[in-house]
Image 1 (cartoon, rainbow, N blue to C red):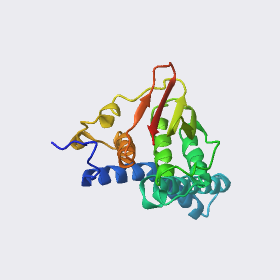
Image 2: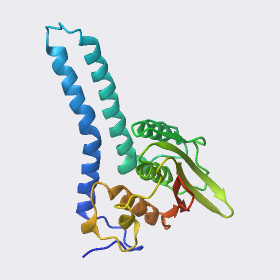
Image 3: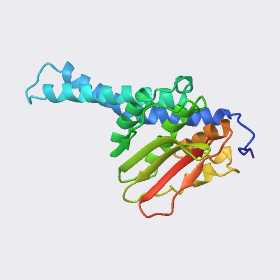
Length: 219
């Protein structure tokens, strides 16, 4: 069985398949709603006065699908690695992504320190996505990348009712995580840790307080 080693940054084909499954899961709902709305609009007999409701459904669902694609394009694709020190776009995408899960994302400082390594913005976006998974009833996430002593620390801290590391996510964060055991539900944790390893660091879990959990990477 294959496991992730701290010095091994190669990604198994299964990881790509699971990332694709996760992305498709998030956009299939909005796109399906767009199709439903279009079917209503195509019905010339609007005896129930549903035309306005259908237009609203199409507009809202199309926006959700576009937001999801933009988020995952930055979080999983090369575009996120190429982001510079201005994180305004990533912050906006994170805020919109959080709303789907009733999570408020507080990303106040939208610029990176000059000392931040390339790919730091992409890492922060994935830290947000991972923390959202740990807030089953919604809540708030604070995002930061600041100097602490001689180190730069990228962090996403979440708080909310039931905040906790999901049981199926924990194995994906271990150094001996088995690729065969990964699923679309825990691939986010595995991939986020992989990004931390690529930056010559590791993913730290910050928990212990009730209703709070977070993740950080010391750069």
